[in-house]
Length: 230
Image (cartoon, rainbow, N blue to C red; front, side):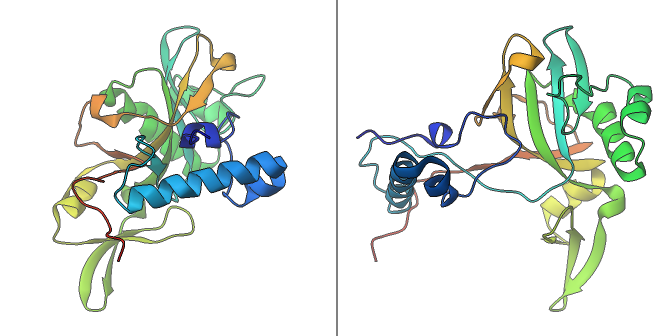
């Protein structure tokens, strides 16, 4: 049968919780198991550098950030907003101004991070609505020595990320106000009707020194670099 793309493999639910591949067996029985097997085969083909299926498999990397940030243009009124989980509620918590953030999200840490997002994400010229994980703001960055090497570290959730201190990446991170990894794009004519898909293209976003950003795409370099059978 045809190989399922990663997109159809992941349920089209609003992307509040990504399933582990083995859970598809429990969620969707025989069909779920078949999808999981097809997906793993596609992944194997990609890593083996063969495109037997003729299709590139899209893999996204799970970055472990917090909070979840939703941002973009509300199609219902054409205005830029930021939010966190709750933007798709019946009464959505959308923040157009710092005052909205004070009202909807008074908790100190989250409040500050959403205000940074509201201030600086408009510089990216985001089209539509995107979701990402915030990785750090300046107050989260620490200097650490690991095995006698100097690193810039941050721990947004449960994983510590360490960047060699003298790298270009560390310089960009130090100069930015915060970092974010985008993993989901929402499309639709109104906020309540939007569908999730996973092809966020950050190349169309404007670069700014204030925001370090990436998408979660794992690059398929089959053809130019791949693992041999051995």
